[in-house]
Image (tube, rainbow, N blue to C red; front, side):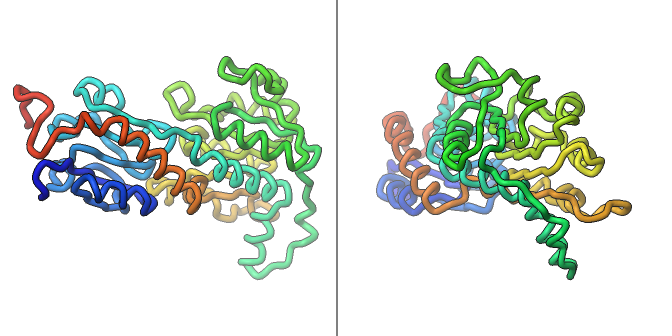
Length: 328
């Protein structure tokens, strides 16, 4: 190990721009395939900095077992995969790149998903895969002049609204204290009853867990809308959402953030259901929203800015946060 250099563990896929920058200043361990933190891994235990995206989950009880850790860089938006309070309690800084760098790409996928559902593309693909030509069952609708509700006015929500507006959709944000004052809005109740498509770009917090569940699905029932989730899997009560789709109370469902732990459930939700005339109009994707070359480059640049701001605090090899802290 190079004497005096910080140790940085990069545990997610990142652009070479970030790895090159780090390699000039630190000892770098890059393992992009991880899904969780292992404090017993020597490379993790030695790290002063962890760089993670949404693929890596950290438990609160792991922080005390990482006494050298000084900084966690969340190379993306959302902190639902990190024990934020525990990091703060142990005086580990948290730098969140935020949704700005990924917003253009996630907005593109949201628009793609809305169009795919309106045009019944998932049904057509499923029927062709089963050897059936189902053009007559796929009469669709155009996005132009369609009323689209946007839930969440952060970088992704705003970028989605702008893109769909350029495509001719009539977009409205659900009224919320964080909605920009210049934005076109509707109250949640009115939006639920009016919009043909709803795009959800809300952060996952305790108060947004299963945000779309039985109560909201009941509010949607009369309009039979399409739902697009580019946030987190747990924003939807997925069994309830798919049941509403199968019952004809929704017209389509697209969920991008299917992570590793959701694969088995996702397979069941996309399976053809006995008693229905055809496949469900459902599109599930393995969290592709920010998975573009351009986004990775923007995230890398933003991560470098965050690291630069914190670099002076990084302790050299062997130092600990507190001499009195015991590691079990």
